Length: 305
Image (cartoon, rainbow, N blue to C red; front, side):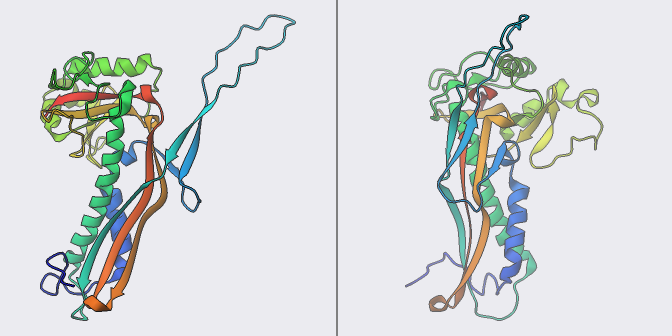
C-alpha cells in the first residue's frame, strides 16, 4: 500500500531515539498548556470505568441557637456531577528507518514539540468550549450566556449584536458579577484571544507599574500569562473560541473551580517497528474528560474578532 506523503523519509529525517521522545513530548505538552493549568484537576489514572463522580454539596446557613433548644439540622441535599472520560486523542508519525544513524536532535525536538503542542491545544480547546455553557448558556457556539466586553453587562445575542473591545469598566463589571455570585477572588483569571491583547495594553490599569508590580514580581510571561488587572491574572491564547457569528471571539473570566479536567491516562508514547514499511510507527495519546463544575463561577465575554 502506498504511503503517499504522510510519512517521514530519510530525506526529511534519519532514525530517532524512541526513549527520548516520551519525556520531550510530556515537557512540550506541559509547556503549551494554558487552560489546563487554570482549572481544577482530578486524576483518574489507573482506575477503571468511564465516569468520574464528583460530589457537589450545597451550602448551608447558620441558624440562631436559643438557650435550652436543640440545634437545627441542615437537610442533606447533595448532588453529584458526572464527568464522562471520553476524549481519546492521538498524534502519530511513521518514520522510515533506512539508516542506522540517529536523527538530528533539532529534528527530533520539532516532532516531539509538535506532538506536545497538538495534544495540549486539544485539551485547551475542550476546556475553553465549556464556556459555551457558562452563566446559563445552552452549550452551543451561540454563547447565549455571554456579555459584551465593552460594559460587561449587555447580553450578547448571536446574529443580533457583535462582540466589542474590552474596557476597564467592562472588566470591573464582570468582576462584580463573580463577586455577586460569591465566587472567591483567589483563583480567578481572565483568558483572552490575541486580538484583545492590543486593547489590554492600552488600559492604564493593566500597564501601570504601580498596578502590575515590578518586573520579576510574579508577572513573568509564562504559559500565556501576560499580567494581571484588579488582582485577576490575565492570559492570552490562540485557542479562544469563535461564536457562530465569526466576527465575534470569546474570552472568559472564571474561577478555577468553574471547570474540571479529569485525566485517566496522561500523555503516553509508544513505538512499534513496521517491517512492511521499514519504519517505526510512533504514537502519543491521552485519555481525559472535561466538565463544568460551577456555572456561576464563569462569565464568557464577547469580543471583537
